[in-house]
Length: 156
Image 1 (cartoon, rainbow, N blue to C red):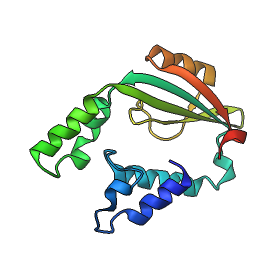
Image 2 (cartoon, rainbow, N blue to C red):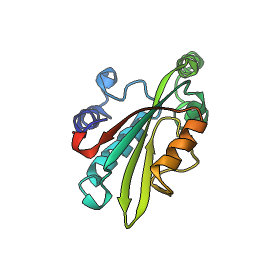
Image 3 (cartoon, rainbow, N blue to C red):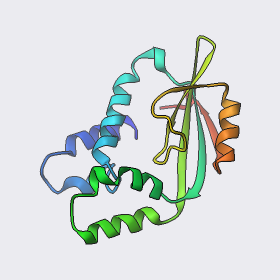
Image 4 (tube, rainbow, N blue to C red):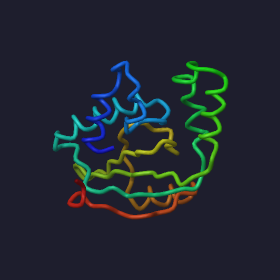
C-alpha cells in the first residue's frame, strides 16, 4: 500500500460506519493488523538507515489458504458460519500472488524483508542473507517466478 491508501484506511477504520467497502484493505484478512503494519513501516521509512534500494518482485500461481489457516483465529471467530465459509472459499481460489523482496546493503551485509501474504520463509521482519542471488535461487526452488526488479529511484 502506498502512503495515501494507508492514510485513507486510517481515516475510515473504527468510525463505526459502513465505510469498510471504501477502504483499501477491504476483504483482506486481518485488515486492521495489515493497516497498522503498513502505517508503522511508513513512519519508519523516514529513517534513512533502513532504506531499501531494490525491490525484487516474484509471483506464484497459488491460493492463500496457508495464510488463512495460520491467521484465521485472529479474525475468524466473528460472524456467521456462512460468512466463514465464504471467506474460506475466497481464499481457496488460485490466483497470482505477489512476493516483494526488499533489499538493502549495510556494512557489507545484504539485509532483506519479504512483503507477501504467504511469506514462504519462517522469518518475520528483516533478515540477513548471503546475497540477493542466493535468495532468488531459494525462492525459485519454492515455485516463485521472477517478475521484475525495481530500484529505489523508481519508488514513489
